[in-house]
Image 1 (cartoon, helix red, strand yellow):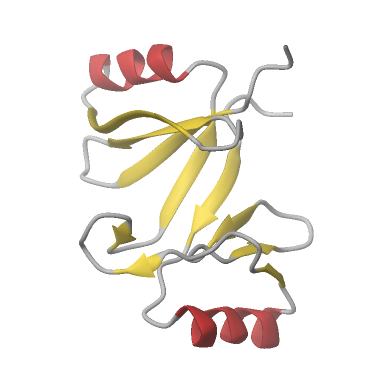
Image 2 (cartoon, one colour):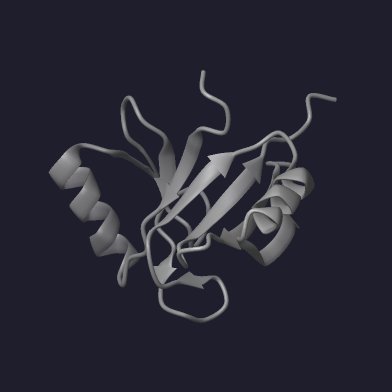
Length: 121
């Protein structure tokens, strides 16, 4: 497996019910509505993701975001900044012990995220 693979993709939608129905009906993706306010999808053969509310406020997203798996968020953010990127949102632990993520901007202005899986301890 390649280092730092794409592990999650977020596709913002203006209407979560209609947006999830579109991807389910068009591409046959499995939709999981168990997390309130954040429907998730699984596409066979690829990473899964979620459908956040489209917009620019807190917990809203203006554009598609790709998340890369990393072994250590802090080390990755240091490398990102050393190579011309910048941290947009520092480490956030995901409630329920599902790991953590941080958001960064690359030198071209693209906004992505890094994800650290929960430790096996």
